[in-house]
Length: 219
Image (cartoon, rainbow, N blue to C red):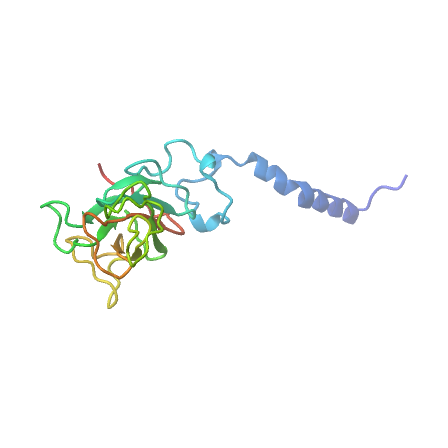
């Protein structure tokens, strides 16, 4: 019987390593093999990590709930008084409308949120949330079909939102908000008029993209 040549042995070993070696390594690597703070969000392919992949309590806690893993974004629901009523985590109210005497100057008509992270690489979106069980104008019509401009405040309205502290573009007035960790949301009537206590809107705000810099707010 002929013995296999050295080149054949080397080729066979190379084939085994190529087809099975990497799988073996992947099966053997655990958290104990990874040095703390060496893995960054850029090292993980988008969409591969889900909330279920994280140990309970390991994600930064927000005012309510927990922030999702990096890359999935965060959201908050703000009621007509400017208070956060639901959220995925991480947001706090910095200033809101003119609801009380402690509201810092410049909040009239707007709501300012502290995102507790630098928003420079994130998108900021907002949308008016309908409230078809609240009769805002006393017409007893809650189906959104009353004729006339702004005759359906429960359904209508417009809204804008942006990160604060954009040099030459956006300046936020309330003390401590004119920086890239804050965002401002401006709900308005359909004709652009500032909302009042009777016509203010519920709204959702969404911060998209990588939230790997999220810092849990101090309670």
